[in-house]
Image 1: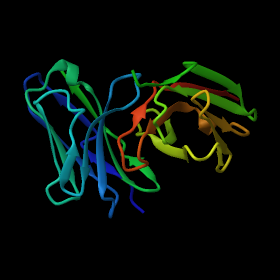
Image 2: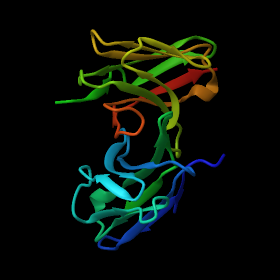
Image 3: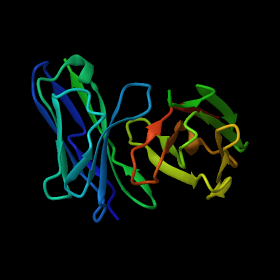
Length: 111
Length: 113
């Protein structure tokens, strides 16, 4: 079946611009996670949804980061007033009890 | 603090040999561990997982070993192939696949033909 998909795959933003990153999880997966991966590092947790409820947002680095999953399926990660330190790969994962499965990521470059 | 780390940044092996990738974790409360493979430009790919009530689990050409006494996790890849070349991450959490993961920094596996 189809895996986790993310769009866009690449995004170049000027500093101060707002961006929106989309995640389509595996159909039927209740849990959805966002992670941030800096170059050469492992992914770091940002936020977690169970259906439409955002149960954990402890990893969001600032109030410029906002995530939503209004209908319990597709999720959007929004970054307002982007800064150069926001440049990273943003990974989405969905899960069942059998494992946590990642999408290809969105590579964000802030100039 | 709590961390998941890897001993070596790179590992080079001959095609056909067995590979062993090691990982240390410091959170003794962790009860679920996963190995991921990440190829350039792709997201982490699930390889195999293990729960803390087990010390060994086998998959296709891969085996994960868990030593809770010394808080050590390893991934063994049998008959390593060029397609195994990638960055490998161990990850851990408390609560299974539906809980946030803490990742190590990753180790690069390079397979020599």
